[in-house]
Length: 106
Image 1 (cartoon, helix red, strand yellow):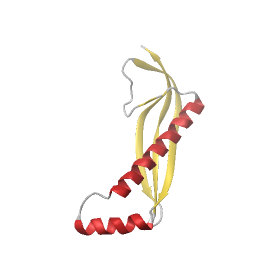
Image 2 (cartoon, one colour):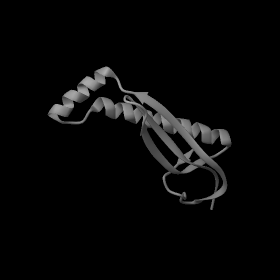
Image 3 (cartoon, helix red, strand yellow):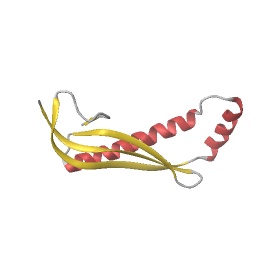
Image 4 (cartoon, helix red, strand yellow):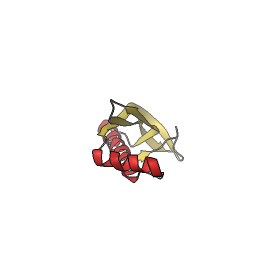
């Protein structure tokens, strides 16, 4: 499946638009990671534990969006976007969304 942030795919044309598809995940902070994050906040530097956590969350949201697109019969998702939202004190939602389409070669 082609997943792209642009509104067009080089060498393809959109044959049919199937609509909005999305995938999301909600992740909670972890006490151990919070302690490391607080320490790194004092001395500076990247918080690798949270970098990995958010990368995994983005991939899971993306995978769920692609699954939804597949279920509609799409072969591509255009205009991919990510959004995040804080839900409560220790929860964050990551959402991937875009437009599911069927393409054909030009």
